[in-house]
Structure formats: structure tokens, C-alpha cells
Length: 268
Image (tube, rainbow, N blue to C red):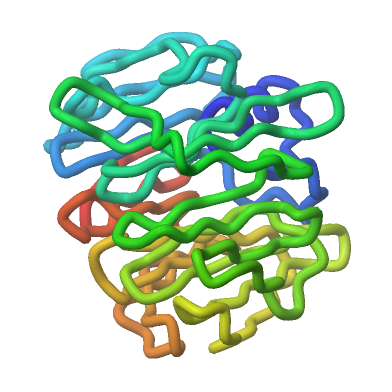
């Protein structure tokens, strides 16, 4: 979640999007947003936010701040105000067609689902929830979200189903057929994948922090941990593996966008 990550980096708290503590901070550069035209990354010392075009050229760079930063229509053009007033986190799908806005309140978080229309982001008035934390994600092709209730829970029209084997959530992402979820804490990291109806498909443990991504238009998911990005299907069939990687995410075409430890961005 874009603003939550930026704030955590600025505070040197680096504990994931929901406040769950990571066992080891393995990543130093992060992708805030990316598409097939460019990307926005954050990292380095001092902490900087950088816009990079598809050729890898740095189009702009500025000191990091606690202002949400996302791409304006096409990356690396920048939109540096919150997409939704009052939101503290913004969680879009990889194809940028649907997003969740997290709006903190005194004792909980209001979660709203937005759909991209030709005129901009429109609030889906039938899709608003109350959650325990800013953890969450939404599917692009169906009415499904995963939220902290307070443990990670899949919510669909058929009802609620707790995500198996997880007590808390740090990140999650939906692909076409299901979702990938990670819990990062001092004991390590656990990544699970589930089907569209919440059935457990795979479980994998890591000794360092893991980040998870998904391609909204295919069966692909990705896990970044310990400098390696692994793309696979929900059932665990490895599609590709890239090393020397700090962070990765899918763009709207399904390509994997990677940033390395020098802050260099490339498409795979």
C-alpha cells in the first residue's frame, strides 16, 4: 500500500503495510507503481522517489515525503496527492482497473472499493467495509476482497471465509483465479495461495521478509524474498525466477517489473 509503505520507510520502521514486524529487512528499493511505460520507485540513501521510463532512463527524482505517489495515467508521470481524500493507503490491482482505499478512523479502518472509469476513479457504493487494519486487496474480475477481520478473511457474495494458516496479514494480491497472501513477523514469513473460494492451495515459509504480487489477468503470482523474485501459478508451478531483485510487480500486460539493489528498473 503506497502511502503506508512510504511512511514506514521514512520512519525507518519498515515493518510492512500493516504493522506486523518483519524478521529481516531484505529489500532496499521498492516499486510504488508501474505499468508498461514506466515505474516509480523509492529507496536509496538519502531516501528518494524516482520516476523511470521503459528504457530505464530516470525521468525525474525528488526527496521522499509522506505524500502518496502514484502514476498519472501512464508511468512515470506522477500524481502526488491521495487518489481518495482522507485515505492512508491505496491498493490497486495490477491492471489498475480496481482499487481499495483505506481510510483510518479512531478504532478501525473504513475500506472502499473504487473502479476506474474514463473520467477517473469512481466509488462503488455497494462495496464498503469496516476492517481492523489497512491490510487488504481486491479482485479485478469479481466481487471479492481480502480484509483484516481481524485475521485475513476472504469476503465474497457467498459470505466470509478465513484465510487458512494465517493469524495476520501483511500483503495480499488477487490474480484471475485466486489470491496470494503473506504474513511477516519476527518468526519469519509465511506465504499462502488460495483459490477463488478460499481453498488452501500452497504454503511456503521464508526466513526473511516476503512481498507478494499477482497478475490480475492470469494465473500468475510472484513472491519476492531474500533478493529473488519467483513467479509461479497458484498451485506452485514456477514460471520464472529472477535474482538480485529488491522488489517486483506485474504491469497491466502481465510483464514482471523488477527493481534491483541499485535502483535499476527492468521489465521481464
